[in-house]
Length: 582
Image (cartoon, rainbow, N blue to C red; front, top):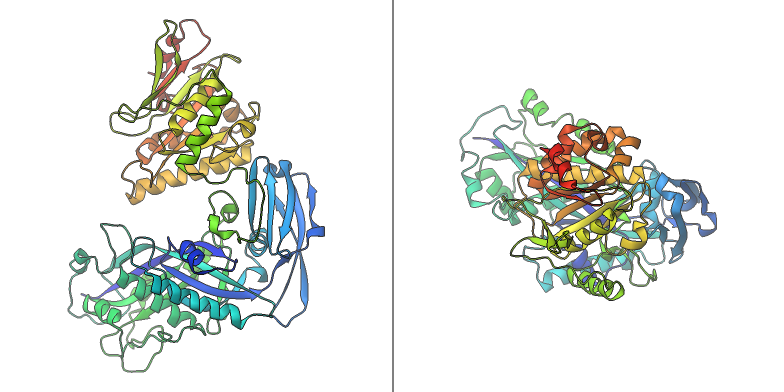
């Protein structure tokens, strides 16, 4: 049985800084393939930075080719959240930048900012591929010798470009998906192992560990090298079906005569090209084959002589632009510069000062909890009980503790609704709840207050993982939570909340004001309230009361949120409000 082996690669991050061996190993710890590339220097002109309402305007300079003239590109960052932007700085001759938005510190490479602001749509995003190598990933073998060899290659490229107007980049890619189909591009039929039998041995995908196998990494590496033909790769620059490598023979013996590698451009700021691939694009769709009896010498690509046209069309063999176009129009995000970007992106020579909102470990957070208890004697400490899965949030009228149960009977996180009039203490209870749940060490906290009435940036600027103080940022936050929940639901890779796959606590202050201002968000909240718990996402909201209008007129939203923790403050016989949720 003949078939096609298909892999998809996603870009984790593109690094511009200069690496030593240890830092390179850290940068590539989660990836499987890395690409070393170059482009003419991109530098921000510091004196060109101007703050405008909801935008920052600036200029970068670069060249087209290392020998060309310097060109100035006027650019801007726009968004309502930038009304609080300040303190824009450049470092290392304009190659690195930082600026603040409220309590958040954003920083990164000037090249990446220039590419983002142009939506990767001009020459600033172009990078010339110099080398392609294997990283294997965090859980696979990568000994000190292999790490040293990787750095030696990078060091040689650094040395060869000393004194020139080039910047050297390292892009880390993850092999995120493997598909196998019982069809290929060749018109004849032949025997072979049925697709699936060979998979039981995890030859092409390590299913128990949900990661690519070593054979997969080597096949993808060979495919990329033969496609780009980088100048610093001394072997595998050709895909010779008549002289197959060991991995090509394994692929062929398993019945796969065609391999498709999709280097997806979604969310990428870089457009790769090479001396062989002249068109710089963010997505690349790569095909190589191992036909039964190749009759003509082909160094890469398709060597079969008899191609079935409808099968080729099905596999997008002859119409790759449709796939490429999907990546080309993908929305770009500021993930390269925020808290979720790799910390190792910052060159060690760059000192940013106090980094408000930096990523912190559980132990660091617990230390901060102790600092909070020392400041405010009215709240002793988070008392999360891991055995019971609950913590206390206050005292009832009879003096007994009121507990917040984090999990339902299936082990999923529970939504919560805190009700009460203005001044009743909803925000105080919410603060205790965020601390209590954070003390479990199993959640990240995403907090929103679109009215900015509760000064959450000052209170939570260090502890929270994401803070939204305007409608635009809440829209991004809600969209990200939904995307994570949908991905966990569809792919089936989520097996419960753990330190490795933490839950998300989405906190929305004054939900009634949010849905009044942005009624189009009600549908998104409905969807997240429905699928969130099984995917490790819980929504916690504050509202004045249980009236349906407080939930955007959505009975589904009110009902879903009401299945979790409900608490009423400042209302006599407040438990009567619970009936509205049933």
